[in-house]
Length: 250
Image 1 (spheres, rainbow, N blue to C red):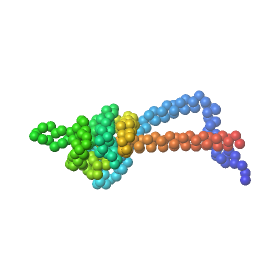
Image 2 (image 1 turned 135 degrees about the vertical axis):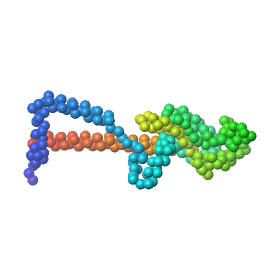
Image 3 (image 1 turned 90 degrees about the horizontal axis):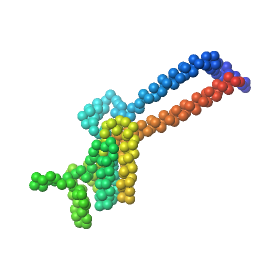
Image 4 (image 1 turned 90 degrees about the vertical axis):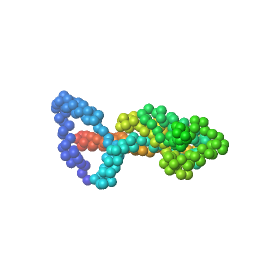
């Protein structure tokens, strides 16, 4: 089998490289100009991580979703903290949960939180409703009575607390400027750190959900894929350059 020469492998395209030998200064100026233009272009690249754009379609269901989102936009910025465990309503677990809810409100970029600790008892004699969970939790029979009141509370039962008392939900609202910027990664990371530290030893499992968390996962996946594809492209470019050089020198 004949060995392919430069004409059969590169079809003479490698002769373009001779231009840089004839007018090196002009080629260098053009290369620098293209690099600067490419730099400006890279800074303008933006990943659209909007879930509404991801599932966009011309259907009545999607138009209804857009209308609801326009009227109630807060759900786009809510992080859902889901905590579950057999010992969820035990006294020690409840104290740890309250510490977690308090710490989550202090994270930079949060606007508020709704949890089982937001619930109030029914008002009596026109007085201001007292918190369902007092500052100091009772012990013994008093705590058992508190658990029964919590399980029977119509506001949180089936919404912020499962009917079996083994799963609870906290809705943490983030500032829109945080969700739409690179600060979202730091905010979600801080939430995960607080969850791990405050719930340590309680035997509870905590997970995050919500639109901001899914947006962050999309951003991370896009950045990871961009690094992989750039590395593959660079390797492919080097391989092509080697093949052209081999063909030119043969």
